[in-house]
Image 1 (tube, rainbow, N blue to C red):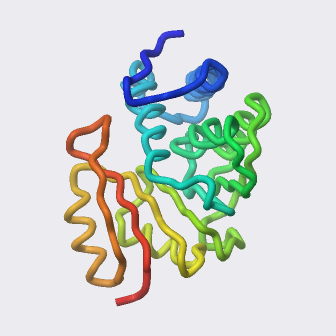
Image 2 (cartoon, rainbow, N blue to C red):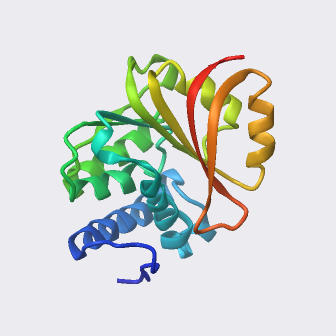
Length: 206
């Protein structure tokens, strides 16, 4: 196995094996559908897998009945989180929304070969026919203002959006407050000192 597990990750051998299988699928499919950049392929564990894994620290999985990952793309963080859930008592629904047909096929292949309990929805987010979910997650998808526009119709009134954002996250928060009201707690990223994980709730139009 060509990865090093960070000291803040507590993971079983079985889960590591599943993550390795996912890692290998990403590398296998990327030449065909460009899941990650050439640079990221060389550092896939830290740049994408462990980066996605850290989102789990901010989710009370036992309270989630329907988790929706939007713009799932290459499976970050959706497939990584689904692998983590496989070793827990999670009994809720887990949906991955991806509008690109080829990437959706990749996600379905990951689900089948790794044995994950996920639904892959090959639709645009605004026509995905989901309402009342507890949790929406997104990584490297769109500016926060747009993420709120995408997420709000999917969420229950008490639901939350967890967005993985880069160095400009504070500017994105300020821009989003021009149109939206929301509570926001930011957590420093463990893999990028300039990035943050935003946990957002009580979302409404300003």
